[in-house]
Every structure is written in structure tokens, then in C-alpha cells.
Amino acid sequence: MGITTPEEFLQAIGRGAVDKVKVETWDGLFRLQGQQMKAAGLAPKERKYVLWALEKFRQGENPKEFVIPPKPKKTIRGWGPKIQNGKKIR
Image (cartoon, rainbow, N blue to C red; front, side):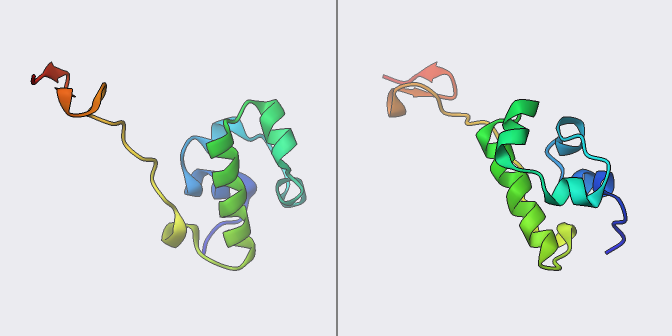
């Protein structure tokens, strides 16, 4: 797998986790709880993703195989079919 430090793991899972989660040891990373991440300022989706990825890593999976990129922003906004791509169609 090639991951030897917690920082490398956080870098491998992406989504800016390396900037938001500050741990120095593997023990500190494995003991990390949702409440501590909430205090660090992570949103609920980010906390769930980090904990999910950490559990997958514990089970021996390679982060390159299970990493999910974040969803792109929506392009259709507003009241459904009345407004598409920022233009009023009716």
C-alpha cells in the first residue's frame, strides 16, 4: 500500500482531510472520534467520510481503490424545469 504515516493516509483519501484533521500518530488517528472532528470544524459529511475511510483502511483495503471523489455542484437550480442552467424557460 505504501502508506506509512497518518498524514499520507489523509492525503490519500483526499477532500482536504490533511488540512483539517491534525494527528501525529496512528494511535491518535485510530482513536479519533466524531466529537473531536466536530470541534476541529469538519462538516458532518466530511466526518462521515474520514471515519468511513479509516474503517476501510483498518480492514486492509487500499485507499486508491475505495476513495470516492466529492460530488460536483449542481447546474440546475431554482424551481425545477422553470429555470435551467440559470435561464428562465417559461
